[in-house]
Length: 508
Image 1 (cartoon, rainbow, N blue to C red):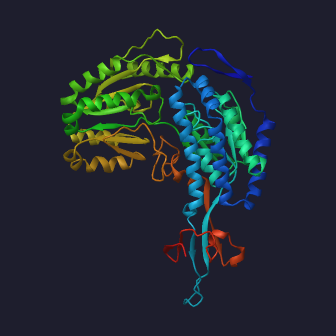
Image 2 (image 1 turned 90 degrees about the vertical axis):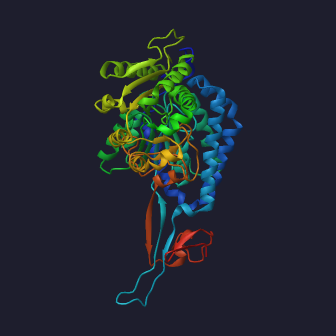
Image 3 (image 1 turned 180 degrees about the vertical axis):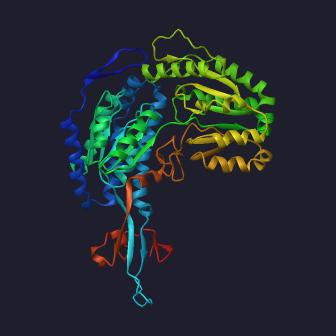
């Protein structure tokens, strides 16, 4: 048995939870496989109704969910209330996507029996679901990236049953949400195996889940070590499966000279807010900032003043706080990074409390310490002083994959930054201009992904409606009788979808 721990007090939260057994895992996966075979009788409209029903259930029990999430995570109530709205918003957005239908990528190349020298067959294709999906809950978003989060919403929308492995830091929140999903599944008359929830205080259940032959894909948000371990497990199976792991990022931020002259103090204050929001426990936190050395003094003073006045931060768990302290100690011991604001020791109420810290280093020293590009999960950032635009470009070219990059500049700066932008397009999934990367809008165009090691597959996103494409594959039907085709591909287009017919988009 294991318990959630209240990070604010260090005390155990009742009730206790039991780790799923091998029999539990097998039952959940087999039920999901059985459900997948039954889903052919359910339409996109049925799945849309299921998603809306889940959102309604979460809203109706929102107060209890938020209260429990606050107890287990220490996150403030307003933040959790906002996160709950984001969670229900994701579900409703995918319901809209199902109703609109173009995500299926339905394509029709009509037969040309008169073509010479070889007649063309009738060829039609669309996206079809993969099968049961294993979803792993994240520590830093107990609602939006957890049991009913974006991975679950997009997998269910695509027509896949889901087996969720709850994060051990918030099992009570996971149980509340899981029961509401199960109620929606039952009330909508979907098969029981459409959704299952498993608990574990460690990693054994997750390992067994990824290795189970019924699972056809994995969705994970968490640490690089955890994500890469799951990637190996997924690829080493007798039947390898895709593993979509979002593994964190340092999210470089570039301040160009014109922007620094015009609004350096304003950027510094915005940076402080972005680095410390959520106690720095956002995968989109700007963890390294490149700024012109000749203009850095005032900027650094503003950062020192704004960060130095902050109270200690409560982290999600004692373990996360301990890893944060270890990471900043290693940064001081193994590189020439200088701590310019923040204390390494604090008079904390619990061992889950930490201080915000800002480091500084020259670009030359940064380039010989590539480990400084690794994510430090917590309220800290690294200021890197560069000399010229050429130096900045060299730094960008050395970066590995990240989720985001940010550029602060004037129009004149931007006119000279084309090469920098071209490099960043190869390094990240989202480039932000004159803003900050924390805060990821759930929308049709959003990309929350990036080249390895930010994610396992830089062609995908875990946020936004494009996330649904992770859990489908194209299937082609050649010379099928019209009545035997899925409705989405029938000649009369009974669902009124936007389709690519003979190379042109049409709803006819």
